[in-house]
Length: 353
Image (cartoon, rainbow, N blue to C red; front, side, top):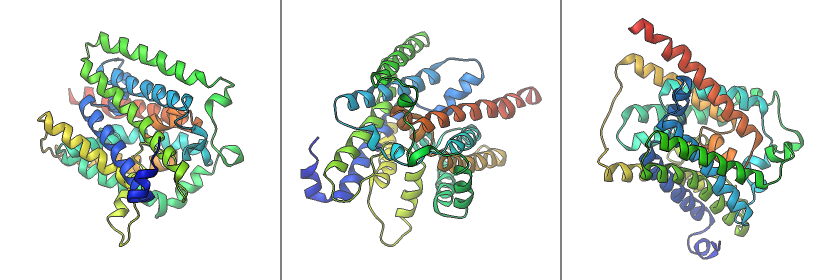
């Protein structure tokens, strides 16, 4: 992909921001129309159901694998140059952070990506929770919580200053990733048919996975022609939320993929909800719901930065290139979410009845 004309026209930093904006637009539109949500899928699983939310999440997860692995096979992208793969990974961070994030997204009733999408539709609960998430993520990255995050992350790290490629770790050929993605996609389509999910929802669910591949390919293409170092990255909402927040708070902000991604998702979801006539202001249902969302947002903000990514960053973008700590973080997010639903929500049912 030749991005030199665009770089010559607007510069490297603004090109990176435009690529983030484009990736965010695709993600926002697709996520809003498909109602993609890891939290909803984990709750279905915790309650012994394999319904629409599980099918949508599984289709997104599998098509991200297919799109990304196909892009790498065709030479449009190299996973070993991705920032997530090129830096030291943390096994302890993936375990602890993943568990905290999973618990937090159940309490907040949505992962960080879902909160951003809902905020664009007028959900004021998600606006408050999303802002708290961004502030805590920034505190965990550079603020008061950074020493604690760094200490926990250093308890158990990957060797040789790099993350671990799961396929290499297991001694599997590169084609395994594409085959696995196709197999999971077939299962997701079977599950969707059993739940009578419409074609449009399936297309948009696949679009969320496509957005992950788009981000990888665009940033990789820019990195090949840039004179300055460019991080090869894709859709994620932990670091970008913190960076976007600071973009509007410092006197001389820097453009980049992150600060284009978050506004892009918001704009894409806003456009999609507007066309579907789903724009509607919603607030908290009382103080207990607000406290719950605030606690969940704090857990997600710290957990995402500790785990090296959120439900999208680790759970879709990271797993699509087989970053080993991302797969571990995703597993722990599921465990944390399922246990929280069992202990907090399902255990409260008899008391309420």
